[in-house]
Image (cartoon, rainbow, N blue to C red; front, side):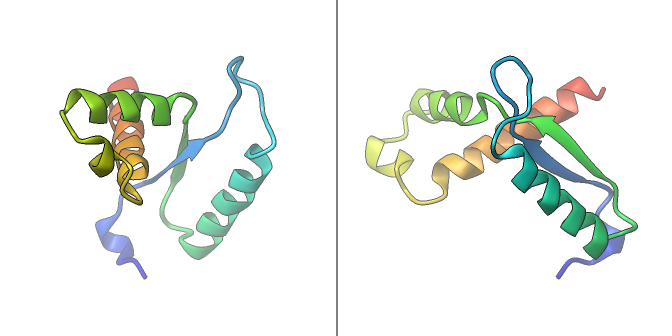
Length: 94
């Protein structure tokens, strides 16, 4: 699936509540992270709080002038939210 020598780290959005507490989805993501670690033992997996990432991505898409129809395309919001998460991750790790 992946050429491990091309990947330095896997970043996973971690679902926390408004107050930073665990929620119903946290366990699902924990299991996913364990599967990633089992599948790619040489690649570190790190997490970042994904709370508000979809909201922030929606605001970015609106500000970019994307039409409502374009913003509602399958995967568009998820892709934008992934960009928000990666940007936040890189900004907080400098």
